[in-house]
Image (tube, rainbow, N blue to C red; front, side, top):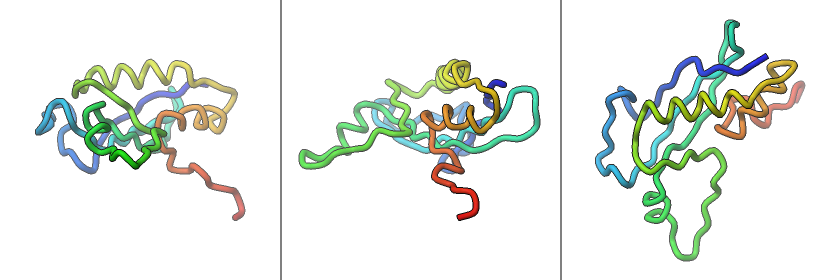
Length: 120
């Protein structure tokens, strides 16, 4: 079984394909990747913060730390390159079942079921 990118959207941006950040070298926004089993119905959301190194530098004070989990760091905004990166990443996310695959995918983005415990 393999993972497949079904669609992308952002609660912050109306049209991701034609989006141009106000500052091309410094931005950060939420990408929501909808990913599911290839050739099957269904998808789950994975939240990815897309940002630039300049944005990190500008938002990291001298006495602070920033956790980098679920950040995709890019030099500039290129929608097609981001899609290609995610698709290539997902090629390494295969397994015997969706639960196994979804845990691999969750290293890329915050899985909607991350931390969920059945029956709790």
